[in-house]
Image (cartoon, rainbow, N blue to C red; front, side, top):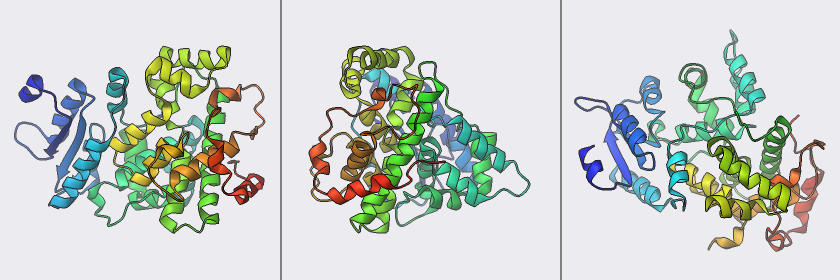
Length: 360
C-alpha cells in the first residue's frame, strides 16, 4: 500500500494467504483507495467459502499452482482492456461488484432457492434471462478455481457448474447480486430494456445457428446479445443525474443515445460494458460482441463474428416495437445511425423476426 501511494499501479496480483491480512482484505483496501486498479487474486484453496470471501473485491481469480502461461495470458488481457476516457466513470465501473438484476427475476430466483427442494434447472433458465446474474455467474465459473480447459459462455452451463450452495451464498448470504434500482428510469423502461436484451440474445443465437457456427460461437452470440446493453444498467444506476442528462438529450433534442453519451460522459454504454466484462475476465468473443454491437466494422476481424451477429440482432429488434409497452419512449434505446449495411449480407437473417424471441 505504501508503494501505491507513491506511484500508479494498473494491476495488483496477490496471494489469498498472507501474513497480517488476507489477499481478500488487501484487495478490499485497494478497491476502496484505488478503485480504477485491476485486482487479481491467487489461491490454493478452491472451496466455496474461499471464493465467497474473495468475490467482492476481486475482478479475477487464479488457482495455485498457477501456470506461468495462464498468469501471463490473464495479465496481457487485463492490460489490453481499454480504459475509459472519463476517469471518474472508470473508477466507478472498476469498483462494481456486480450488475443490478431485474427485480421480478431476482425475486423468482431467490424464492426458488429458498424452496425445500429447489430446481437448479429452473434457476438456470431464470438466470439465463437476466444480464446481471448471467455476467456474475460467468465471471465466477471462468475463474481458474474451476480449472476449465475452455471458456464457458453459456449461462445455463455456468449455473449448473456453480451448484446450489454457491448460488445460495451469492444471492442469499453475500448479497453480491441485488435488485435493480434507478431514480431516472420508470418500470416500463426497465422492463423493456430486459426484454429487448433477451430478444436480442435469442436472435443473435439464431443467426449463429443459421450460419452453422460451432457450439461455442452460438453460446457466445447468445451471451453477447444478452449483455449488449448492460452498460445502460451501469450508467443509469451508477451515474444518476449525469445519465439523466444523457437521456434528456435523447428525449428532448432527438439526439442518438451514442452521441449523447459521448458528449456528456466521454464514452458510450458499449465501451463501459466491454470495459467491466473485460476486467471480470469473460470470454473475449463475448466482450467483442458487446463492444461492437453498434459498430462491427470497428473490428479488424473478417467474416462472421459475435460483433456482427449482435449488431444484426440489435438492428432488427430495434426496427419494430416488440413488447407493446406504448407508454415508453423506445427511442431512448434505439440505435439510430448504426451501420445497417452490415446486415444486408444475409437476407435470411430476417426470417428470425417471426420467431417468439421475447420471454413470457
